[in-house]
Amino acid sequence: MDPNFVSREQTRLLRELREFLAIPSISALPAHAADCRRAAEWLVTDLRRLGCPVVEVIEGSGHPVVWAEGPRIPDAPTLLIYGHYDVQPVDPVEEWKSPPFDAMVRDGKLYARGAADDKGQVFCLLRAYEAVRDAAGKPPLNVHFLFEGEEECGGHVLDDLLAREPERTTADAALICDMSYYAPGIPGVYTALRGLCYAELTVRTLQRDLHSGSYGGVAPNAIETLCRLLCDLKDGEGRIHIPKLYKSVVPPTRAELRAWDRLPFSKRDFLRDEVTGKALTGLKKYSVFERIWALPTLEIHGIRGGFVGDGAKTVIPASATAKVSLRLVPGLPFVQVAKWLEKAAKAAAPNWAEVDLKILHGGDAVEVDTSHPAFAVLDEAFKEIVGKPTVRVRAGGSIPIVPRIGSGGAPVLLTGIGLPDDGLHSPNEKLDLQQLWDGIAVFGRFMERLAAVPLAPAP
Image 1 (cartoon, rainbow, N blue to C red):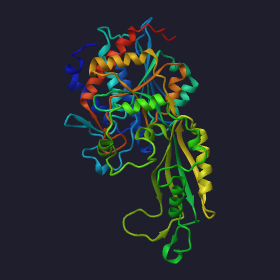
Image 2 (cartoon, rainbow, N blue to C red):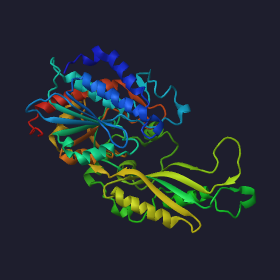
Image 3 (cartoon, rainbow, N blue to C red):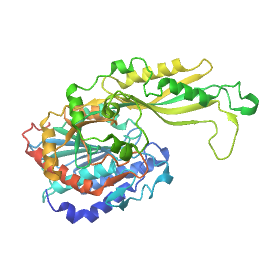
């Protein structure tokens, strides 16, 4: 790897990343479908510039998948790189200190939607690949690239593709750079991800909205009914009242719990710097790590119904909808939990309410065996560049496609260059630029080291 690559090319790299971040590829909003395609086309152009002889845009029922293959290197292992080019919505936009799609550098940090999740990390891997090519443009190993545009919205284009063509996951290792360090200076590799069950829960109590003066006191209010139903599903202590849920959880091993106890952790700093609230909630008899890594959650993301515009309108709402999700852990299959949620919601509804549950998307929890030699290679690369190997941790988030990527037998290395305070899905999302520069070097060395490991090349 060229040791001067980052210092020599830093101005160009920052300009290119800002161009990528400027594309508002918000996959959940139909108005941004063309922007998602622009982001895919940006990747296509970049991969061709990097000398990939195979670059494809694969269409489906949603945003396209980008597939590319680097030059064929005989007798070398194959690395599959996955990432996503879509981003979350920017609301509430008024809380951003600078425009979310006009990336700004402040105090060594790059602020923009997608800076850390996941455009900045995709860019890091692309530039690591660029840095390890030789004078003829050839990398030290075979590299396949797989980038999707629906990770943030639960689309099915990539899932359908890999179900139809599972051979695309055939590799000696799969690298996903969509995570963060455990803490500043302490890189992480992830042994588990929580799954997800995302749904819309609608309650209807009337045929139409009513005048609150004429009917208040007798007509059932849909928003009130929905709120009471939601409180029945999850109580004030944080316990979820869905039968069979907790009994089905596969708990972490004693070895995992001991390892988590050894991690440097300050509850006060975590509350102040990451949670940014006044208190931690949830099941108090469990540690913070157990609550965010090893237990299911039920969260309410938004409620709509009635009148929410400026001024006053005195109505009793006829219907109300809540967007909710459960994060799932080992032992809780997505399909089964979706059925349990629907049954519990209908059981909690009063006899005057009609309840409809629509499942929007989801996926199973993921467990990763980190004993494969590729994980030792990643440790060596981090230790060489940043001075420390990775620590083994879990993640509370979800990447639904991971089981498909690992279905071909390749070990899935879940890691990343983000930091815990990057503000994913929040206003003022950022990426520390030193993390980016170090990451390019780390993953470049990882590719070089992996090429030298005596693995049987993928067919």
